[in-house]
Length: 240
Image (cartoon, rainbow, N blue to C red; front, side, top):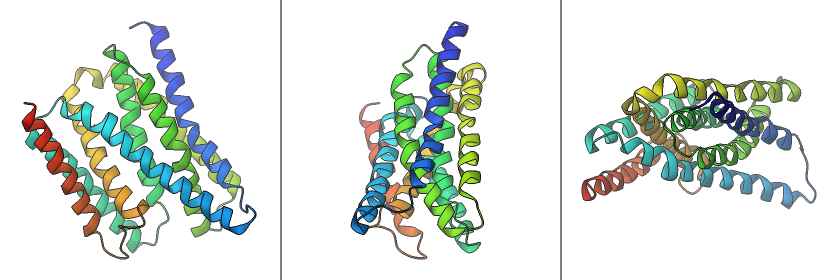
């Protein structure tokens, strides 16, 4: 790979990350008229974010992760991510923190940025990963901004947007780490992706999917992750 290639990857990572503050800026439009349109937009963005997260799991995180793991280690990484996010979710709930959407946003942005760098170092395609990151980050930035702004009125809108812009810089940093360091350890990268996939699945079913969420109950999304894990292990065994 040439230096121009890493610069290209860094540009993709930065543009994809800037979708987070772009989503936050969109969320600053407090009122849409009529009132029903405000609710339609909000729920539509939530659904878009859930769909993008599921697509990231199905198209990037799990396929690239299982390529370097056996069924047992893959299942352990996936379930470990889900259980870790359950623990984080319970901690945030106990401390009345508005950061659940933010945690979900960073959970897929960081490993996918690493994947972007490792894919470039190994000569793979980076376009799909970059597009998926950007598509996910826009609604996630929107949802995270709304969640944090409504729960913590002392946060100034401009300050929150600047924080999101700062987090966008994590994309190029993680891409550099993936390109120069972790590309030599594909099993580690695969484990990170599967761990993130478990966390993302938990977050989707606990915090986003309204028909599954139950107040003060964290077991239903774990059931959803277990169901996905059974299918993943079955697929790997069938094609081994």
